[in-house]
Image (tube, rainbow, N blue to C red; front, side):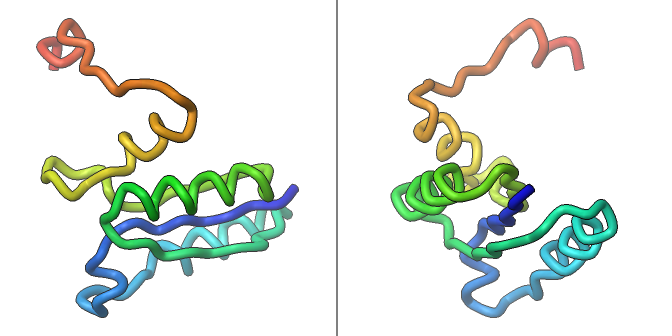
Length: 99
């Protein structure tokens, strides 16, 4: 099985934070016998994120993403995955209010 990790966030590319998630995930994948073939960091840009996801979808069996899921406007992981599969993200209000 070919795995790929895509870490999302401009703060990674700016050197503001260290990417410890990739290190952790790489060790876990190895322990499970899953080969990690690619690891990418991409900034908070929807076009580049979708490009990375599309490339990963074409060449890997498993894609793990990290980051880009917060409440701010630049957190685009959900939108990027939706664009890749041709869907529109939506909030299920019954689930949102149940919390």
